[in-house]
Length: 368
Image 1: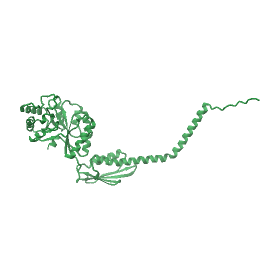
Image 2: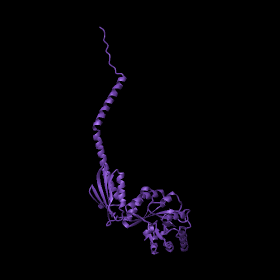
Image 3: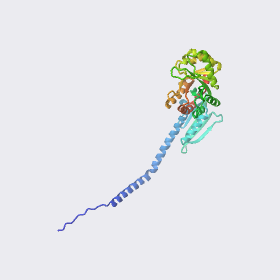
Image 4: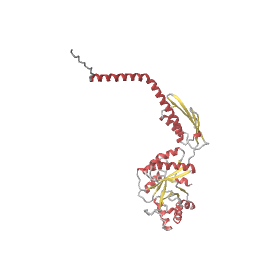
């Protein structure tokens, strides 16, 4: 009897590839059918979610802009569809109005209406989204309210060593600063003249003896060992070296500003020159401002150094600290130095404080 050989069916590689190709096509077709079936609903849900997010962003930006201008929460009333905002007497109605319009457009909102009354004391804005009205805002001038703010004077010390791009940028800041110039340096006169041409206040940054023994005395520095005659002569010489100066503040001086025998003749010379005095407060027990007042010289003290730590977050915090002090006391003085980092922070933060109602002034205004 003959054996019958059994043969097993084999699948060639070509057939295997065809199988997988057909399976992938089947799955793709199935996914496509599901996508076609569900796409309109998914698209609708996505659009609704986007619109809800945009609506929320527009409503939030209303408060964001108002708070930037120092508008208090209790000056805002109304509901989700109509907000009424009282604008204080020290803020131009046009400023928050323009900022709101710009912000709404940036956020993708539609400006359905923007109008003001003939008296110019009320403005209205209607904002829409996707062709529908979203909310209305009425800005109403109210002369019975005012923002809590104050005057801030920023003095930048140590000018005179150079006249470079950063020097020009300090002089060109949007808000005014006072410029304190060291006497007898290569660019002292050029910086003081450029500042005066821009309408900025110039101070003589008068070198005075520090407590630290390691210092380099020049021909203008006031030393505690000097005679009254020499002190007077040096003060007059320093004033001549910065002729546009209307005021004086001390450079260093942690020892000299607590030394009465030096301060008396110094202040008498400043009195004759009819300049004001800013006590830099390089010593916490400085007597300089006390002697200045006794000599009937207009005077004010420095409240804080802005950049004693050369780190951007610290400088930024110090600038806003000036605002806090100005809110409490009506005014504040801060001293900085002509550094790129200080310039950057002032450029960014001074406009923010100005928006909140703080007024940047020449330091002499605070001596009055």
